[in-house]
Amino acid sequence: MKSNLNLPILLQLVGVIVIIAEIIIPSGGLLSLLAVGIFGYSLYIVFTGISTAAGIVFVTADIILIPVLVITGLKLVARSPVTLRKELSRAEGVVSQSDELEKFMGLEGTALTDLHPSGVADINGKRVDVVSRGEYIEKDSKIVVSSVRGNQIIVREKD
Image (cartoon, rainbow, N blue to C red; front, side, top):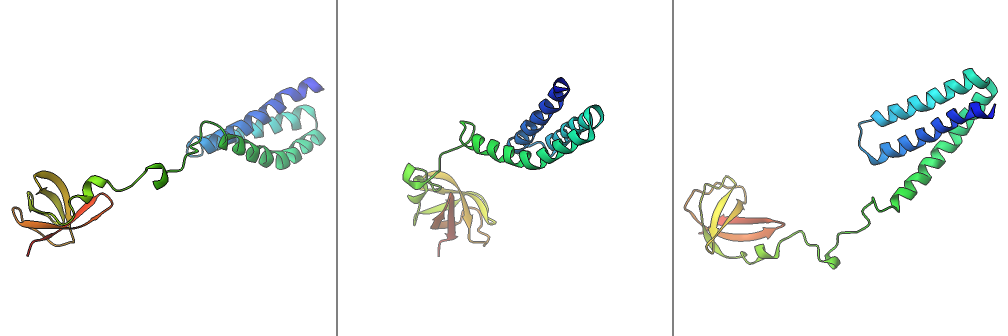
């Protein structure tokens, strides 16, 4: 009788591994369907090949152990080298805004393309992508950098 339980127990363990893989690998639910099939086949073998009482024991064990094993597996995966453990912060030198763009603040230039509202300008001899505050600015108009937000240079037409 013990040899008959080997395959269903193995299938139960494979099912748990497939569920953990579903959490890690985006499969659109295909791995979940595979896990349900594996659990179902395991229970089918137990109910038809062993006994109804053994099948009820397996179902009860699944209800209790599968969530515990999945949570334990997720905690192990969280500690594994597969996961990103670094936090991107200013203290570690990560900035979302380029220091290079700050030097354009207040400078004047010329619109190389029509800005409606984005386009290209020549500022201080450098060709850069710019954005107006929403207004249309014609090509060859004189512009002034009014602010720098993130990686955007915001300009307005020079008075």
